[in-house]
Length: 347
Image 1 (cartoon, rainbow, N blue to C red):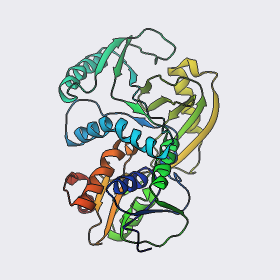
Image 2 (cartoon, helix red, strand yellow):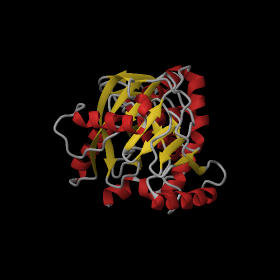
Image 3 (spheres, rainbow, N blue to C red):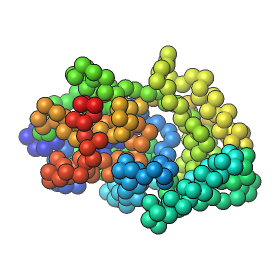
Image 4 (cartoon, helix red, strand yellow):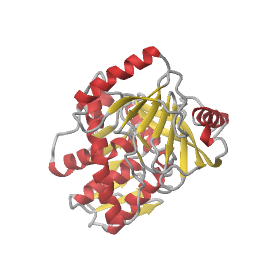
């Protein structure tokens, strides 16, 4: 297949988004996925596109802000080309305030957000009202931000796949022959391959569990309490997640999923009678740096890596894919040093 300029290995969020960014730049691309689209961690349920707290500002937080702000336009283009709605919505987020100390911190972050978010979004401290779609707040106050968005992970992948096919991209399920440059977006298994290649652990898989409930709150903000995301999706479902398990016995859902459900219902009693549609578990790739790892594969000319988007993959995918594609096609050097594989491999 001499007509292929780039082969992308992996049809998760980093693989498909990178393929899309390359296609937009006029390259001929093929995607090879050994199992199915979204077979790994990207095929989960939650889809919380949430920012870090607006304090101790650094380059990583600034990049995340850029990616979250560009997401609406980026996903709308994908939707328009492929015709599949990813169910993206910048609906915001509510967080309970635990006590007086947490209230002081929340108000300090409110001031910080006005500076670092530069008017693009707000972080507000508001009184709790006792509405059905509010978390239980011991202090009687809530944090509301207008930057957080949600997306349906599986619909987002289907949207990207449809847009790619509309542009003539072949998505091969099974074995396929590589042609042209190669992008490796192969999740936690890819991190294991990299670790074996250099003889040192540079990342690993972290198990996450989530649940999907039938409850229609389509335009409601995300709820976040420590260790718990509750995300209302645009198809009449609510996702609850997620755990972070570095040690596990079984890859599938277990009792920790039931604990998530109990805690979610305690925070949001309106979900008490909501039917559980699915319990999900997957292994998410976490690079040692905890940041995405994108860029050239050192000492392997013509090969690139897009991996390690632990917990931030969908939120960071628009910007990471565009930076990697710009580097590959135009030679632009926008990728932060901390994201580059050569930095991670030397660390």
